[in-house]
Image 1 (tube, rainbow, N blue to C red):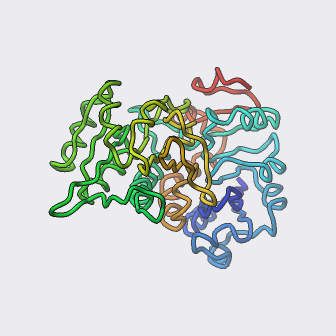
Image 2: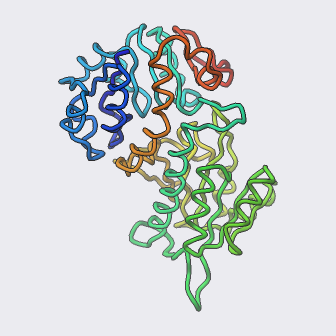
Image 3: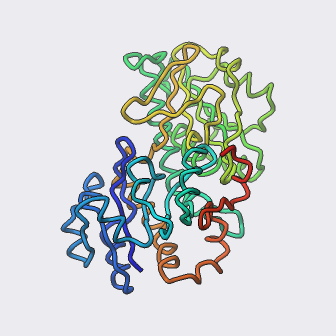
Length: 356
């Protein structure tokens, strides 16, 4: 199969779907791999590294999409990409269509088949292609939130870990999956007082094992309101696979927080889990609502493209190989569950009620 890897076009997105070694592995399996010139540069991978492993270099996006049968990229296609997609393309990338009805309509009109990384699901419910980016996003959420609490950044001037003679900063995390767990672990390691809201008992147990400065609670509304009111940093990492994220924090709860506090919404890709969330970019990442700084960047892992590209590539390569092997991939249950659009028809159960 001819596999095309385009340059990412989302604002300040530096990741590339296939690192040179992975592309070379596919070449050795007999596939024809095309890379848009410069696609790996922001991740530290020059065109020459790919060419040396038998990868073809396309001069621009038009040539790349013309050559490819399967398009493997990181983020959802936007305006420039959509111009080049065809009905015979098999698209494999993050899509997050629950929060993007307009994009969904465009993909349906093109008539292609699109499999979303985030909805490829194993029989045990695990999401293997979402997991590595979730871990990175969780860590970035705590790193960025820590910085935004600094007074020169408009924050309340709190050092999360505290020190003798001062109180610890307080972090509240919604969700204890890969993203929320990553955020909580980093905050706990920094010495903050951490409260994690989670519904699953096994995940609550896991959070408690992070340290004596971590508390895991069931998300009762009154308890959420109490804990959020005294928080310095709140991280949202609530996930319903393929569906729009539920709101777990209201504007009224936000009003109870101290000015200069920070909210980071990792779930913004799926619409956001705070009532006051709206998508931002790395170019203009924050805004203030009710005196609280909001960070809602839709591609958080894109800030560390070298690490992120290596991580996502290791996760997706076996699945790319299965798809490239031919139509037999449809017999793979995990990939079948990952299909969002099939030959121009919306098929994923979580998306069927979208207003498109």
